[in-house]
Every structure is written in C-alpha cells, then in structure tokens.
Amino acid sequence: MGLLRDMAEEDLDAVARIEAAVHAHPWTRGQFNDALRSGYVCRVAQEGDELTGYFVLMQGVEEAELLDISIAAAHQREGRGGALLQAALDASRSFSARRVLLEVRRSNAAAQALYRRAGFQEIAVRRGYYPAGESREDAIVMEKLL
Image (cartoon, rainbow, N blue to C red; front, side, top):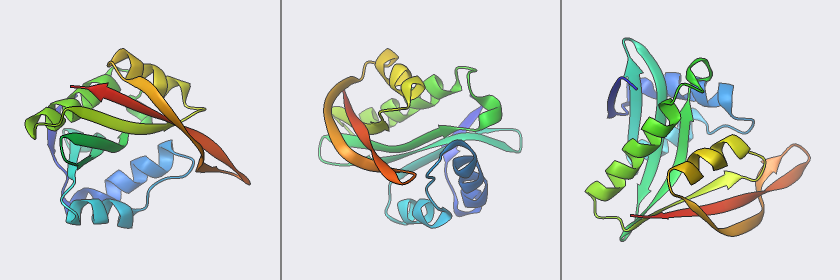
C-alpha cells in the first residue's frame, strides 16, 4: 500500500481526481475539504509522489462510519483496497470504536465482497439512498463489530 498518512489540503485536487475517475456520483473537492475541517479521520495512501487511495472516517460515540474509501483506477485489483480498509478499521480501534458502519451501492458487488471478506455484515437497506441517473439506488448498510 505504500505510505499511509493524514490527508492534507494540498492533497485535495489529487483526491478529487481519483474520486471523479472511480465513482459515477463522486464527492466534490469541497466535500473532502469539509471532512478535513470537520476533524474526520482522512488518510491517503501514497507511493512516491502518487496518491493511490484514501479513506474518510467519521468518529462517533463508540462507533465509526466509513464515509468514503477509494483506490485509484490504475491500482485496483492489487489488494490495496483490503489494506486500506484494514487501516480504516485500525484507525477506528484507535479511538475505541466498538463497531464500524458503512453504506454501499446495491450494484457495487466488488465493494460488498471486499467488505464481507473483512467481516462486515449487512444490517439494513436504505431505499433510494443514492442517485442513479434518472432514478435512485438502494444502499446496503453494513456493520463490523470490533
């Protein structure tokens, strides 16, 4: 995975480029900036001068919510997603979270498989949660107990 470090404001352009390339409905640069300013746990994976991935984790009382996690398209299917997810789980443990929650698009079978391999289980469905062209798509809510 390379170096994992805190996301900084100077990373936002690169993070937003990765996000736009790998998501149909990406977060904006401003949303990442808001996450940084809100004190969320925002980390980037870096190899040399290249950012290869990132995650955004919101801390709650005894829980964390994984808001966003992405690997640059050129580095997908190399095991980096699992390593980055493990780093997010480790960060959650560091502030005594007892569980981690996330939402994933019903159509994103690859992400769901990654989360299941890491021990996440489906606990709910949010109907029409995500934009999907002219319609909406359900979100699968998943949880991992720590």
